[in-house]
Length: 133
Image (cartoon, rainbow, N blue to C red):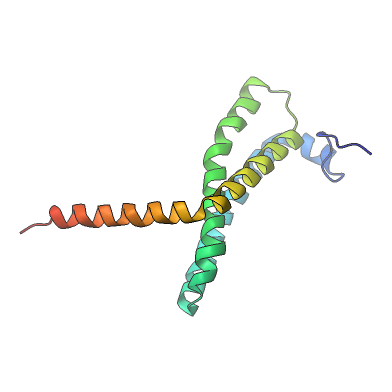
């Protein structure tokens, strides 16, 4: 049995019929995933589970955000330039981008956290320098 990029768990005919719906639902999953994880993070912050937020939810939010940003270009290219591309191949490209971003965020999590902390310190210093006296 070989792997075929035109198959998606038996739903390839339904997915290929509604390519526009695949685009809408694909981006909606990314956006509502970010919103949902943000709400879960707010609830966990109230409870006091900051380590769960720091090591699981925040990297997932970052991963979904990067996937949203980076999936726009291939989607435009696949939809405009190669108009005969199937919805299944579009879904596979989004899954590949998501897994790549997840791997990138998990490998570089400490560096990303350090960068965000330093950026916050620089912002505080500039606000302190620019305050009204």
